[in-house]
Length: 131
Image 1: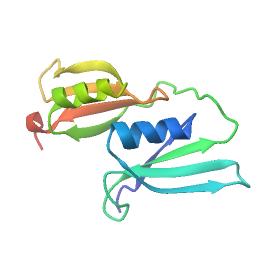
Image 2: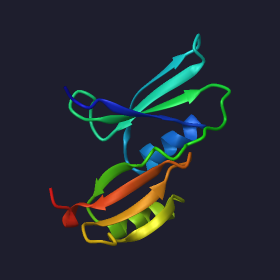
Image 3: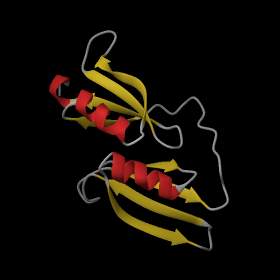
Image 4: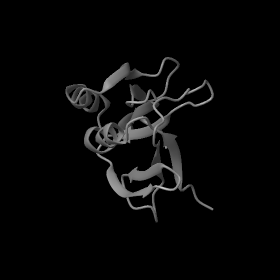
């Protein structure tokens, strides 16, 4: 068994693709419209789906908002330099909801950003991570 993807429902697919591809550097791997079901699926990630887990962005046509609830946590992405990455993301208009710095109770340096739909993404500094 292996992890394939995580699915997120998005309000505006173009805005979400801009965030994940332009701001975070993922690639659009495939995108399919399903007119009879009135939805579009777009798969994004840092590598091909055969050897990497990816994110499935689901856009339900005519739906403009979702209740994120309180069970969802976040997606985590390792970065080379947390401070430089956050500076670059700010310049691209990305919302930093937790400025970069060490975890409160010890551990790696982290930051949190919000995607256009309000989903949290944790950035973890790879240099301070223990694998």
